[in-house]
Amino acid sequence: MSRALDNLEPKSLWGIFEDFCNIPHASKKEAKIVEYVCSYAKNLGLETIIDKAGNVIIRKPATPGMENRLGIVLQGHLDMVPQKNNDTIHDFDTDPIRPMVDGDWVRASGTTLGADNGIGAAAALAALAEKNLPHGPLEVLLTIEEETGLTGARKLEPGLLKGDILINLDSEDEGELYIGCAGGLDTVATFTYKEEPVPAGHVAYRVEVKGLKGGHSGLDINLGRGNANKILNRFLWEASRSLKMRLAAFTGGTLRNAIPREAIALVTIPAVNAGKFEAKAAMLEAAIKKEFGEVEPNFSMKAIRIETPECIIDNSSAVNLMNAVYACPNGPMRMVSDMPEVVETSTNLAIVRTENGKIEVASLQRSSVDSAKDDLGNMLCSVFELAGAQVSQSGSYPGWKPNLNSPILKAMKEVYRNKFGKTPDQKVIHAGLECGIIGGIYPNLDLISFGPTIKNPHSPDEKVNIPSVKLFYDFLLETLKHAPVKP
Image (cartoon, rainbow, N blue to C red; front, side):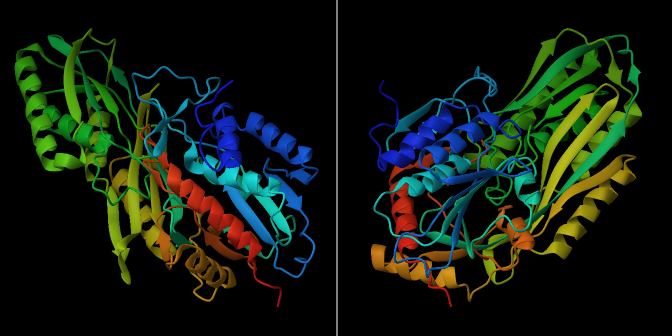
């Protein structure tokens, strides 16, 4: 039976990746893909371990004559971000991802593709099966629940890994070597509210913000894209003051590490103000389209008449919510002084939920400077505590400090120059690579990260560049051939 990616090179890598696509593997639901990986490794006759956290570790001895090389750990994660467009019918628990070739790109239809980090994980497994590849001691570490809090990496125990070098395969620009990353912190504010009857003479509307690009809350935070929660709240805040609008529900965003693409509110308005309300929605939609221009060409905000809901949120709580969301910082806060094109510190107002008497607002702060990350977290606390919310913070993880004297950095730069005739860029990424956490558990590991070119991760617009995957894989194999010699 022909498959969509059968004709792509390297065949082994793309074949494994398409197998991944056929196995549901959203975060926290990786059991089936773990089973696949273990079966694959055991068919190669390789030692395979599932640790207490659920991560998979595979070991392959050095090939003859390469026993004197430093041991390398190839590392990636098995879970994917489950995002789809509202008009796409897809159950991430049961349905396969449907990859398709679109020119030089592979993408999915209406859903995330899972190239983040499926391509990296597939490359690691494909490398294990290479028959004529000379390499030193080799391990593969594939973690779980990376996208929902780096859980697998956090729970990795000391003493399991034997290698000296960890090569993370989760970066998203071919030709770049990543030597540092940002740490992160989750902040969740919770309001309580009382339900009230809808005032007499009110009519109801569903206000929808749609069509935003969204994307990765670290890698794409500096691109000036719209945040659906902030945009919708801007309208609600204005309408509540000028038109006596009342809030019944607010739902926006789905994942802490994705810029929210869509948000919906249910509201009521005095019937006499209905015309003004619809006009205000149209005016703000036009204004925001002008503000964002070509950055968000498909943005829309619509106010649609609906049946009146059974109840609304008490006005004091609704006002507190709207004030806090309006005042909440969002986006890049500071750039790296020595690398002004790189974001140092940022925050993403990721999720708003109103349900059963509670309102939850979740955000993710990132920084390559731990003190700046903590300071920004304090800023979020102050905003929401002033509005009467209870604030909790969790999931703090450290950044990864660059080591310009890294042996694997030196070796990979030389390999890349010899193979491709140019020097790869070395960069710091504004995202939570697992390197920082694993490096904290294994402080003697030499760390580096690279990968193929992936665009729009964490959104249904995700796509991976086909030529870059071959370059990435060839570079990986050449690196394994030239692993540094043990001192």
